[in-house]
Length: 199
Image (cartoon, rainbow, N blue to C red; front, side):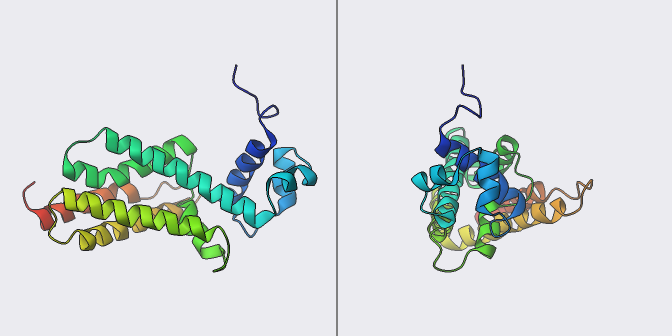
């Protein structure tokens, strides 16, 4: 039988609570007390696992990065066509959102707007950027792009735009708005046709 929320280890409860609250309300707006209440742990228990809020934020971003990468890896394992593999980043976002109920846009972009330069969580923002730019460039090279880094940069702009569009849609309750992810994927497919020729 899987553990209930109350029987999960305290560190897991803290990370789950932090993930929910930081994503829902923002990092700066979420105090440690709110995380403790939702996790059902004492301050002493939290400080036994994390040095403070900054360390908790970094651990939240590390876990989100690992979860996102695992979903993208999973999508790539299902694809063999080089162009489909390039477009996989958009499909991975759709699957990640469906599994995590992420409706407010990108947690990394939101954190990037909040965290000061020296914050330990910035390491994971950099890791997310490196994953996107490096993997997209590798996939563009595999697809035969003459300038893989340039194509990767253009795809990343479409990706970021889709995530910003999702965040904008979330600010209008009850309004689905346009489908930023679907539109970005269609634009990316047209870009690949323009850069690589053929279909």
